[in-house]
Image (cartoon, rainbow, N blue to C red; front, side):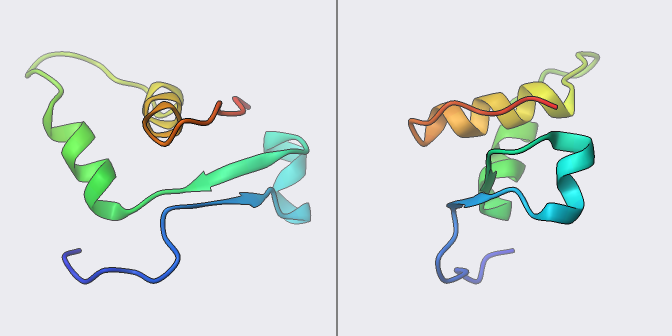
Length: 68
């Protein structure tokens, strides 16, 4: 997780095979460390959905997320 990945984070078009579930548009490919840092900030006993994680990551890079 600590090795820097080239070109990440990035925003890409949603692949055709995923459009049935997520619709057409763009999606964020985040850095694993960004996800880890966000999840670690969640207090014990609290629930955070994938949707909220996506929205927060997108907001952190100054873009709006596309919810499924």
